[in-house]
Structures are given as C-alpha cells and as structure tokens.
Length: 376
Ligand SMILES: C=C(O[C@H]1C=CC=C(C(=O)O)[C@@H]1O)C(=O)O
Image (tube, rainbow, N blue to C red; front, side):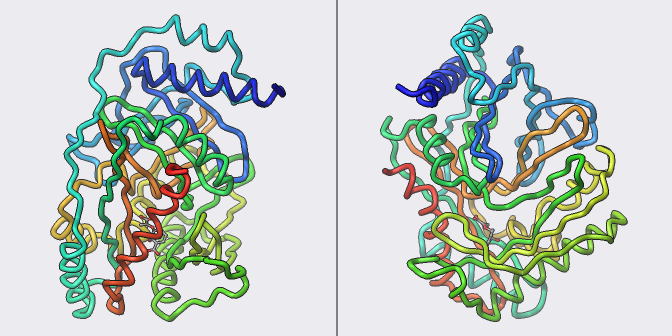
C-alpha cells in the first residue's frame, strides 16, 4: 500500500467515526486544491448566528440556509480540531475516540416534497406569466429529486468520490445534527477573501457539454441576457460597498462536471476587514443564480410557487479563519442524506423566454452531476 492510500484509509475512518458519533463536523476540498480538510468541535453543542459579523476572530465553518428563520438557523462549527487529509494519523483517530458521543437526534426526516413534471410545468408557466408582465427579470425555480438509498450509497464514499471527480468544484460534506447531512460539489463562489484580496463571480446559463470542445460552445440570447442581469447586480453590490476597482474576467464558458455555465469573475486587490466582508456576504446572498432579480419579487414568487422547503440548498457555506480570511460558496449541486434516500436539490433560472421542457431537462442535467458519481 503506498503512503497516499494509508492516509486515505485513515481519512475514511476519521469521517466514518465523526458520522457514527453523530458529531457536528465538516469536510471540504477547495476548488483546484486537491486536498481535503476536516474540522470538528470538541463539544457537540453548536452556536448559531444571526449575522456573520458576530463570528469575527473565530475559526470554523459556517452553514447558512437559503432563508434564515426559526426553523433554519445559520450554524457555526468551531475548528477545535482542524486537519488536512495528509495529517490524519492513528493519533487523530484516538483524539476522536476520547470525545463525547452526541445524543442529539440527527435530522433524517424523510418527508420531502418531490415535484412531479406536471407540477413543475405549472409552476414555470405561472412564473413565465409574471416575467412576461415584467413584474421581475428572472427567478429560480427548484425542485427535489429523490433516489432510494437503503444503505447502498455511503455518505463518506459519495463525498470522497465527488472530491476526486470534481477537483474544480467546492466539494463538501457537512453534518449538523439539527440541519442534516449535506454533500455537494458547488461551482459557485459567493466570496473568497484572503491577504491577496477578494474574489466573487456572476454565474448563470447552463448547457450540457456532451462531446463538444469548450471553444465550440455557443450561447443563446436568453442565457447571455440572464447572465448579464447577474453581473450587473454583482457590480451594483460591489459599488454599494465602495469596491469599484476590480478586474473583471468574462463572461466566459466554464465547466462544472457534465455541464457548462457562463461566468464573469471579479477580483479585487483590497483586503476589507471581517466586518466589511460580513456585510458584503449578507448583501451577496442569495445571489441571482439561486433566487432571481429583483431579489424581493423573486423571493416572493419562490415562496408562492415552490412546494418544498429549500432548507440549506441555495444557502452558503465554507470555512472562515480567525484572521478574517474566508472561502464561502453557494450550496448547489447538493443533496441531503435522509433515512432511506438521498434528496437532490436542483434548480434553474427562469426568464420570460424560458421553455418549460428545456428547463426541466436542465434540472435533470444538474442532478446528473451527483448521480454520475454516486451511482458508480
Ligand atoms: C440553481 C442552480 O444553478 C444555478 C447556477 C448556475 C446556473 C444556473 C442556471 O443556468 O439556471 C443556476 O442559476 C442549481 O444548480 O440548482
């Protein structure tokens, strides 16, 4: 067995132990890093936060819902133990064994609303009518697709497979007993900030890559306009925070697994303090890639039309450091592990020109990002 395989084996044991101890923990792989990091708190009681700035000076992992309310709190897992996969040894496993077992019930509630195709078409038609009347420019309609999983899909295995297959995504595995077990491979950066500056992006438009080359991808007017709304919005937010001096790259075609998106990336060389970054995060979330524009009208329409609870799908998550650095991503291409199934959350941007059948297909493609890997 080579040394890498040894580390991997201990990584699997570490993650499996966290899971069996019902311990709040997180594991992630940053885009292009090819290195898994894991963190957990010694005490099992977690703190929730109302506003991100409350976490200034702390190191840990944030997990925020699409819409924060009494049912869905924004959670923070402190990094009392924080390890890179290469540093996990037998000793790390013993440290875990010495910690208390968490008797808090894990949210494995299997009651999720799965939309039928008919229901989804009805919802889209209603949305298109509002979009054509120019009540709003864009709205995201999402749905849940479940796959039966009576022990066939192991959560640890799914996460590790995703981390290997999608090195350019933010691959995550988060267990918070009251919020559930979430696994995903997100293509969307909400905000990354470190000593070198700040990065964010405007992401929209989806097509299957198929066997085409990236340079052969063409975008229709609907997608170009949809992505332009998102860029305009991100620039307005940056300007509101007096972050006007940025390098803009794109819109360009980027790959996310089996699909491609249109993306404009923004890079700033300033390093705002954590309080300012926290305020920026709260303005960026929810992005028009998961909610719509204008935000308030889109939120209202989503509440009216969607029959499921988005919970933490379309929320944000990621590590924050005590020095104020953070790497936050949008909770997309993700699934919640339920008692005997996995609930995959998928959505897409609807505009006045949307064709319901094509939008349905797009959500199926997005579900394939996960299915292609976990079903293997
Ligand atoms: C809402 C999702 O994707 C968003 C991100 C990129 C492209 C999207 C689109 O083309 O509609 C969505 O806005 C999802 O994957 O559930």
